Image (tube, rainbow, N blue to C red; front, side):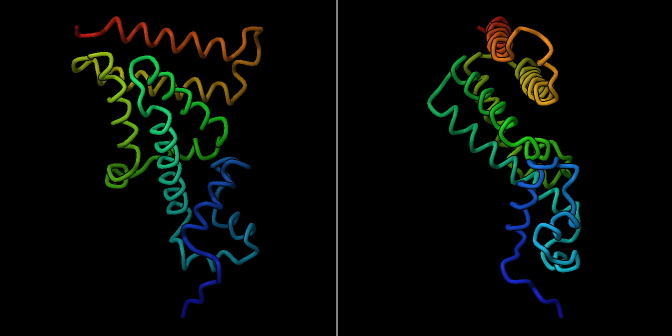
Length: 191
């Protein structure tokens, strides 16, 4: 018979894992680390989670959902460059505020889990923003990939201190990057 410790649940462990990821890094999230956090034995967590992979998958899904909600709120009612900027800022702000969760959102999911995740919403929102630029295929797919690459690359380099070695403020470069993306997308417009 499995005894379930009062107060523990898969949801509570997922949230605690997400908090741990932000504090220590996603690579430091393990069942052992969570057990220490709750002052329980690792074995007691197995009544809620199968293994560390399930925990990391649950954190990834949580992060994707949380980020999608923030981006959706940011872009609501906006179009064109305003929507692009709101999307990009929400993405970057999330990466800054929740570095471990942001890393978790990049965790490789199996195809079935990925297809049912909020990652699909991210792609849909990106394509919705791009409708304002009137891009035909395959340019729209190229643009989705470009935006994801630029936003992720910028956020990752910034988090690693990659922009702290010059006198030019990261904010200036970010604004320049968004202006350049807008100009590039307008230049590819089908109309």
